[in-house]
Length: 118
Length: 227
Image (cartoon, rainbow over all chains, first blue to last red; front, side, top):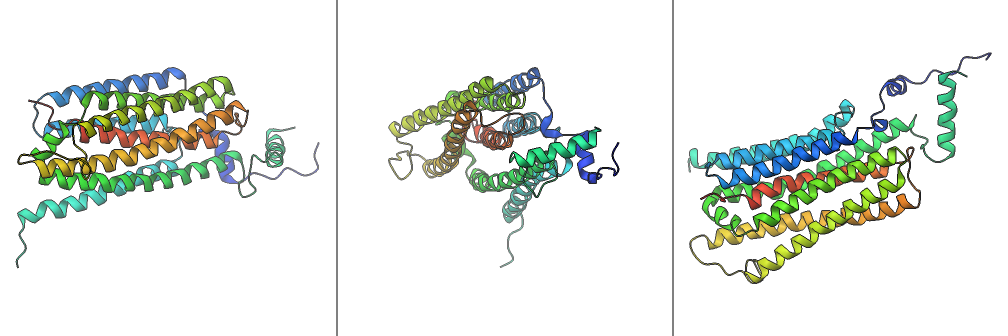
């Protein structure tokens, strides 16, 4: 019987008690399934490149790369178990890059459409 | 003794064993702070490689046929195998981190050694590619010799090719060294279910290097392969 009650842990510590992302153990078969999917997607991108699809070749290959990246991030980098702050931060690098390349291409591609007035 | 008392005394014990720095409330908070910091560093890596991809985008828009002709000069089979090697190495290091969380040290050592070995395989294969390009006179500034209407564009492509794959290979080399060092430390018993953040963060770095290659592969090796 204790005279004083123990100090209550801070709110975020209690939140951690329910969910510790680092302690989570994913079954081996999940990793192997992800690897098999990644290798299947790799074959798909290699084979699709051999067909003449015009600019769709590039679109298909980049779409496959995005799917592969999402698989690696979600399952190998454990984003499915990460907290919202970590997930947001990990997405930010890619979003920032997309903004930079997007704005650059907007300028570059519009130069031929809208010639300068001078 | 109730659960809360246990957790308070556990935390004291973690601090005494040097597993918990004083600015953190518990190991979870400490690990999350480290993961967050790692992601901030990885974001700078994303932007670093992003600059090279941005230059690539501009040049490819300017010289679509030249870039297709240049991409056909690369070794698609080697590129595809290299991609498979890196993807497999990523799954090995993920399994290695899992093993150390379960205190399976021996398995973890082998998985980390396997990751480093696959990384080395990647570098050796790339070395053979560079050598073949040297014999085929494709290296700008060294022995580039291509004629025809697309010669300048092909030279530009190979400049970007060497910058992108060169910086990527440096990242792979750094990763191989760090992972091999960690494999030794795991073998000596430096890591376990309570101390694995270093491994987890190195794995994050390795996965990012893999992600960079996932984009390098179609952009450098797969352009203009049809017809």
